[in-house]
Image (tube, rainbow, N blue to C red; front, top):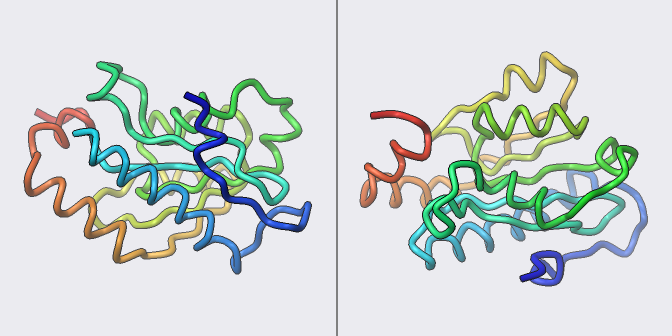
Length: 167
């Protein structure tokens, strides 16, 4: 399935979205998180955006695909497909939850300069590492994102602990 077509989110301008557009693009990630929850997976979604348009969206599909690496951010990168390095260098990764170490590494590997997260109350990932490497990290403190994760953690602690590598 082509996740780029699923997203349907664009801006009229051809420049990188600014803070005024962050909530709109985070909505694409939240939609993916909800789809993941409906599929029985971990409700974390992501969207890779450049030049005012969504290049790919993804959701944590570790459970659905039996994959150890399909987190929201890596799924969005996969959905976007191969891109020139210059595209990544002007992109923003939108994610409903603070990125884990693996997703932080992918963001750094591709030189994505900006990450917008929905929340970091339920999990604090590699934000400090991202900032130390010059990545702008914006936390929108979305109550909707917090509620999604709190409900999931309450009802599926074993899946959550598996997802973050805990016993």
